[in-house]
Image (cartoon, rainbow, N blue to C red; front, side, top):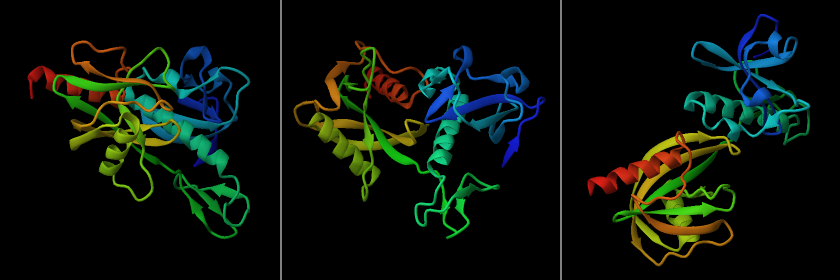
Length: 256
């Protein structure tokens, strides 16, 4: 439920607007509301981190607004809470009006939802399922340099699940579209909330089956097979992509 913040309220402060996050001094604000000039703001409690409240304030700030990617090196739990805040702020911003009847909506007091008083429609934040897959061929792993990645980072393949598709079918399709190869022995590993913009990454490992590597030039700058002990620049620790790569390297070292 949304409430007005007093000077004695404290904790972690997620101030977000248009998928950006307020990061004064480059860090997530932590401490009393008074120290950050947040007294009197409307806020919503969205979680708890190490015994302290995590608050969401949905409003723009005149400066120091950044992508939540700036916090990717934080502890995974706190990063996920920051991602939740950014996604919820965007959900509330984009659901001011009912998509069925056009009337103004209000926030639920009991859950993360927007309600229409006119037609009684109820809206919840939408999550887009994605697959991400590490592909092994003997002592090698397939890695790609995506057009959206900076600093020449190489990572595993990923993509959105389409309507009417199983997760396993999405793995096969995305791999074929992006690399022109077929995979086998697809197996689920783990999942990770990923706020870019509102995804749930479902992680898999697979083995090379057939086909000659030919990367999709629209989404990938490059793709190649890398021996497990001669890898390029990788995604940061804490990401599900990095875990998949490290798990694949462990299998290669073990000769499994």
